Length: 219
Image: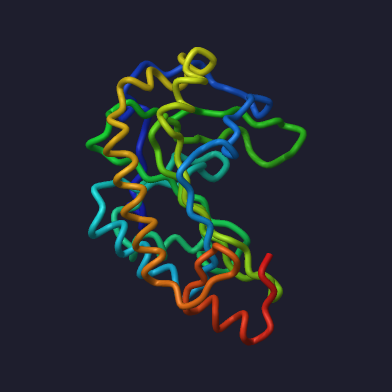
């Protein structure tokens, strides 16, 4: 067993579909609310993720698996940082999905077949569900500070797209949207509480502020 748990399609709440392809149309996140855009650097991620693991009733997954691997679930900060391929804080993006387990059991892991021409592998897996909460952690690359982001679908948006994605995502009515919203808001409040500055409306956390003071450029 590695530093992370490997999970299979048995956790899905409804029957899996056939494998998809990289040409599949994905939901546009621009309309999903509520969101929290913020700046964080390497030293800022531990208090955020410790809070997620210890104070939020969520299971934590990578949003997309590595090529030719199962999707990984993380149960602690130590497990997540032990997965060195994620390079937390030292890359433009680390993309996690939070499953608020009391909101619904209707999530699924979908296998995506990769284009052989890219030579990037044969397949990968992605986690899908209407009420999943995305946590995208930016970081530093070449003195560029990339933004971080939380987000999730609103009930209104999920219902708008329900017929289009019913076979992939199930019924939005199977989610307790009050729990989804309260869970997301709890995370956003924690992020705001850790801020020491702002850029426009975006909270800037302590390590990110130090990086900006040292000459990093906010992207």
